[in-house]
Structures are given as C-alpha cells and as structure tokens.
Length: 50
Image (cartoon, rainbow, N blue to C red):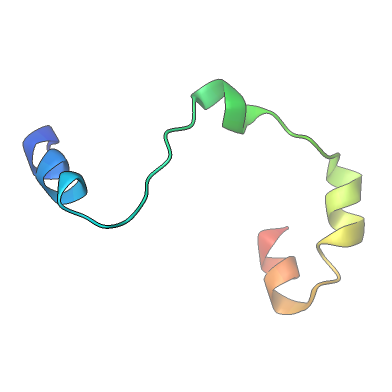
C-alpha cells in the first residue's frame, strides 16, 4: 500500500489507531524466563506466543 492509499483507508476508518514509537515497543518489561513461566502454560495460545 502506498502513502495516498494508506491515508485514504485510515482517515476514513472508525478504528482507533495508536502510534507507538519504535523505542517504546522494543523495550521488554518482563524477562524471557517470566514469559516462559507465565505465558507458555496458557494453552495453545500461550505456546504460540512463546
């Protein structure tokens, strides 16, 4: 999708969008070990996320 098409789609959408900076989503707030301990046991979705 090029810029004019993207502007057209997102400006005419009722979906709320958040712009998050790259530095923000690159930071991990939990350790990998904590993710494995708490998320992995959460069934198929937890296993998929890990």
